[in-house]
Structures are given as C-alpha cells and as structure tokens.
Image (cartoon, rainbow, N blue to C red; front, side, top):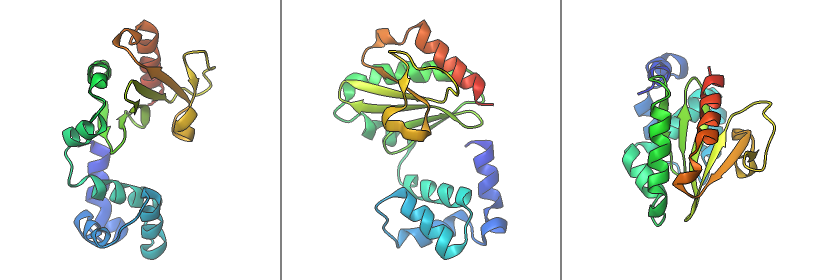
Length: 180
C-alpha cells in the first residue's frame, strides 16, 4: 500500500472521528449512483474533509475487489488489448520504485506523488492514455485530454503494440519526472 495512503488511514480516527472500517460500515447502508454523491454525503452530513471523503468512498467501493479483479473486469470483451496494457505496466514499473499502480473500476491510475498517467480501455480496439503534461503543446498524436477532462492534460490513443514507441515512452517518462 502507498505510504501516504497508509498514513491517511492511520490518521483517520483522529481527523474524522471514525476508523476506515467504521466509515465503510456507514457507506454500506447507502447506495450512491456516483462517486461524487458519496463524497458529498460524507462532507455535508459528517463534516469529513474532501481528501478523506474521497479516499473513504474509493476504498469502500474497491473493498470487495482485488487489483487483478478490477483489471480483469476492465478488459472483459477487450482481451486483444491485454498485451498493450501489460507492456505499458512493464514500462511504468521500470520508472522507479516510487510508482504506485492503482486499478479502479474503469481505469488504472499511475501515481508518483500525484497521478501522472491514466490507462483506460476505451473501446474493444483502443486504450486511451491520459497524461499530466502541463504546458506541453498538443500534436496530432498527443491530443488534448478529450474525455478525461481536467483529470489529464493530454490523451494518446493506442491500438497496437507497435505504437508503444520511443516517442510514447518519452512522454511517459516526462510525465513521471514532472509528478514530483
């Protein structure tokens, strides 16, 4: 587990009045259509700060799923993309020991001090990579963030292993280096 996340979990009772398990129990009886609804509920009804509320909702949703289950579910019906995903993960792991790979329901966040890359199977034949590359001009390949909105600054669409080339690897490294 990420050291910062572990620290937040350890500090949670002092900062929020309840442990993570107690918060999960409260959320278990609620059903929110969107992540943001759960966050808003914790903030408005329980006075939890945004950072803790976001973490509580995220961890309560992912409680029943291992990282492998989450990734497997993302690529169900999109199995042709798995070699691309695996190659991207191999590249990310080689960046350094300070990289955290966090699978979520629809994507995988790649985090150093903050998220610098997002890997999302967009269609049956395409993975979208969302980058945090502040002040980097867009190109035909390094597009604006598109469906990622403000979560990322740029997007690259990958449909084949051959597209994981030196240019793409350089953007991944640049985003990693900028995420300190």
